[in-house]
Length: 61
View (spheres, rainbow, N blue to C red):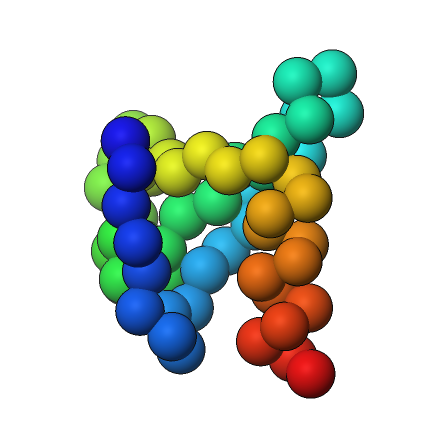
């Protein structure tokens, strides 16, 4: 899904997929304070690795 995130949105890196050259992440606001039992899968977002790294580096600089 195409989605833009506002500056200062907190993201959690879930994993890198080096084969497909993409990164999966979740928004902190999507993570419940108390986890259900059994745990539910978080909503995931996908972006290519280069875009993710470029955007996160720009935010830190």
